[in-house]
Image (cartoon, rainbow, N blue to C red):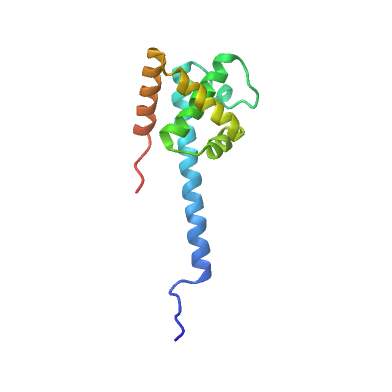
Length: 127
């Protein structure tokens, strides 16, 4: 017996497109929250944070922290974080390793913990 789907192929495409739009909006929200939080905490501009070049060490470190928070706070893959910051996944992996190793510093650990809490609070729970 032939079973007919209650969905039309166009409906499947529409649903797939809607999922992609939702993912894009979520990524844009994550990026905005990270930019604002890290730029404020480290005293750099959002433009400096996303600059295509390395810039000065404090700016590069702030960017590394933002990449770390995207990976840890939002459970994003290195590839996703790299796309968000226009960097390669290996650059993100290096940033995460560097920041994680520096968490032994109590002041930095407290700053990172506060930033993690702030970005999670600024992000609505998934439905």
